[in-house]
Image 1 (tube, rainbow, N blue to C red):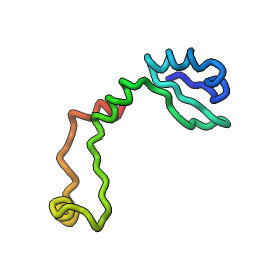
Image 2 (spheres, rainbow, N blue to C red):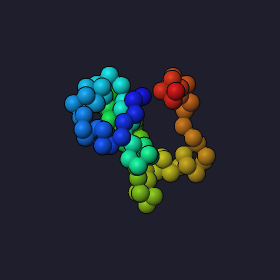
Image 3 (cartoon, helix red, strand yellow):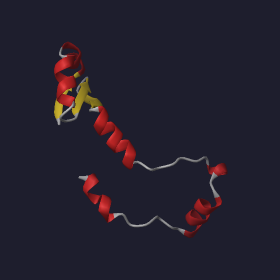
Image 4 (cartoon, helix red, strand yellow):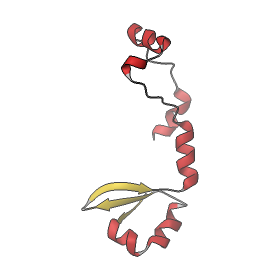
Length: 85
């Protein structure tokens, strides 16, 4: 992953915009990573594999509440392990 300062990104945005089409670009601010610039296609790919849902505790569906009470942690997903590298 390429790394660039926020100031450098502003100065040469077109270059890093082009680079982000091929690989993520890490943007640092005061020496700390603050964001990652990536292509719209890569963003959509990542969003498509994120199937999480958020609920308030008081609005949990009964089946999810029963699973939590029983200690169920979901089905194993070894076919997704490659995404964690």
